Image 1 (cartoon, rainbow, N blue to C red):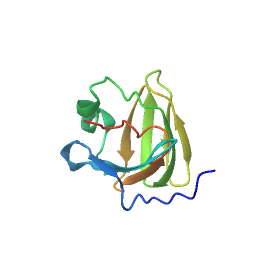
Image 2: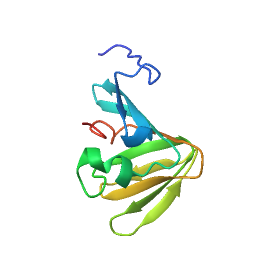
Image 3: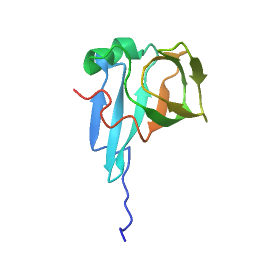
Image 4: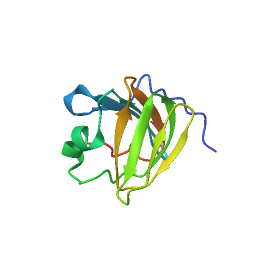
Length: 120
């Protein structure tokens, strides 16, 4: 049996900044995979601030997350779209663009899609 593990996103093992100072992902790495906190500043858009890092047409990460604050709009490659805000649980498959809605940073905890997200 494994023992207790305590890690903190306030002392992340890795920080990956987005283009133009538009936010960052802070990561801790658990045996089952990385868990991250994404902070997306007002004006952030995946196609502008992460696409140059990812090198793909749309985001190809699969996200399972929980929105702590702010709002984010996600549009799938097939046209399906939705907006997520505080308290929303999100499952988002690969093939999407996303952007912050409004003038508040969007903060998301993601325990699936940030392991390789915005990795240079």
